[in-house]
Amino acid sequence: MHATTILMVRKGGRVVIGGDGQVSLGQTVVKGNARKVRRLAKGGVIGGFAGSTADAFTLFERLEAKLEQYPGQLTRACVELTKDWRTDRYLRRLEAMMLVADKEVGLLLSGAGDVLEPENGIMAIGSGGNYALAAARALADSGMDAEAIVRRSLAIAAEICVYTNSNIVIETLDIE
View 1 (cartoon, helix red, strand yellow):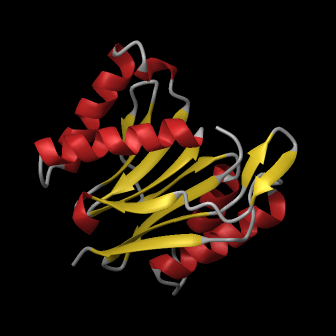
View 2: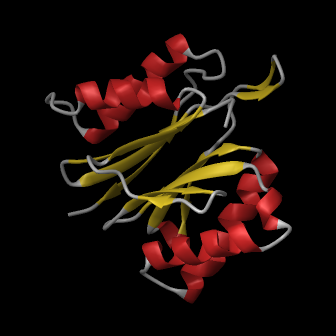
View 3: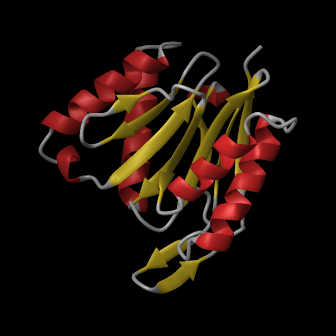
């Protein structure tokens, strides 16, 4: 997925998801302050998306419904969402990826049916995702907390990826 960077870091009693604000249409920046990271499930879940905005909002709405159906069970809600995403003819056409987290787990969701949990508590998506991921992994053993790692890693990605800007939105959950 192009035109954004979303990064999740779980460290030191916190999980943080951050994302940039750039929206690109082809080679043109059409908006610089989009909010691609938000809270779900009455604040108990945080999530960020890469890909088509309308598709991502559709997926966020579907995930909210699954979280109401399976309260406190993020993994189950995500598995049920991705099952629908793979089997429903309308949802199959959605072009987006999501990172979501609660106090227990962080997950990557894709239209390919993926529900992946990071091995080291760090995961990224979007065109600048690999840059942010590499930076976060390098900073993970430093004395920086999760939010500082996300901020610095997204700043590094913004310096490298033309589809990522430095207009950062951060959401944090305390997990301890």
